[in-house]
Length: 185
Image (tube, rainbow, N blue to C red; front, side):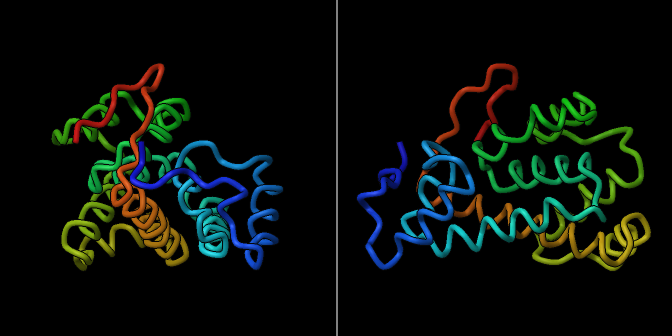
């Protein structure tokens, strides 16, 4: 259970109800789990975070396979089981090799990544561990993804780190996954 209860329509102040209702309408229902079940206590914040997440996820300059690899790398670096739960199986489904996914989960050295995968993992790890990317890592990312793709990469990392901070601060626990091992934290 999270540190605060998940939002219900009764929790939302009248002056924020329109934003809440618009968010729920776009999603199809009030979230019963996940970060937005917490974030909707502040509907405007939830809406803006969701807009950012969708903007970055729909950006074509960073392939979906790389995006999923980045999201599970963020999950591992931030010890966020919920992001892991939401993205490890999808990464596997779209073709990220199982040994790479398992290696990230277990914090093992990764072998045999293609150049773009290695650039994405290195960039993500450096940005989260050192708060910046070295010149070489930045150049490899830009060579592989272009200027726009590197901006997308940077903001994908930032978006999912922001979600991880919220889930970690409020101790949102990931449910068991049918096919993926939980993230050891």
